[in-house]
Image (cartoon, rainbow, N blue to C red):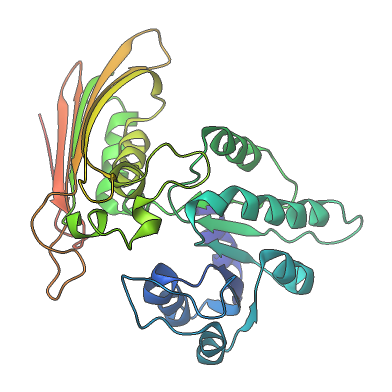
Length: 327
């Protein structure tokens, strides 16, 4: 993100040409309106395999052609068609397709990035990618995506996963405090995340949240929500490498999706010592995160080091709500 901001600062009049792949509930409700409000972004293309995306979470989703008219964007039915027509002119791609398709879509984008890298004598433009969480539903695909994203490329293309809490001021302060050694070497982490979303995981019609796809064994809260907490935890605590995991879950009686879990993770800190991480999560918080007014999700992260501890807790809907304390 720092590299992208620097590039935009150097040319404040530059407008980034963005394509959005996946025009479902999340893109129509959040991504497209946010990009449209951003004076430095120009949504030039919208992609979806369906001419009229559907979601039980919002029965009023708009057809693809109507989205194109609203945002002044060209529309395509596949990432392949998009990149063939628009690839050389794009500055960024936002991927908000079903989880199990992330790997396939990114592989197509990488081919465009590599094509740019192979242009001799040309000014090579980066092609940045923001992908919705979770990165993948297949461990092997996740490792491959990570490896490819970390590989140096001359054009400087960047790859991010949309774990939005990681960009908040409180998160930066937590990460800096841990990295600076303020609390000493981390030895224990306790984290929890509660969402008022049981109604989604109990609804058989919410197949995207509840039905396994690809190589998934199950679907549910761990895929749809715990990924937020895990990204937050590992971002704050630095180079922790999981070595051993034990986890217990309970499940919805109607869909089989997991709705609560408790896990213990033994991590290596890279210096020969273990860090014990306790993680709990549940969709059983009463209320609805998408009602009016919405009921907020609750997050807590406590990090214990050899010389002190840091404690964070807050309401995910209010960026100013988090309380950060230390001892």
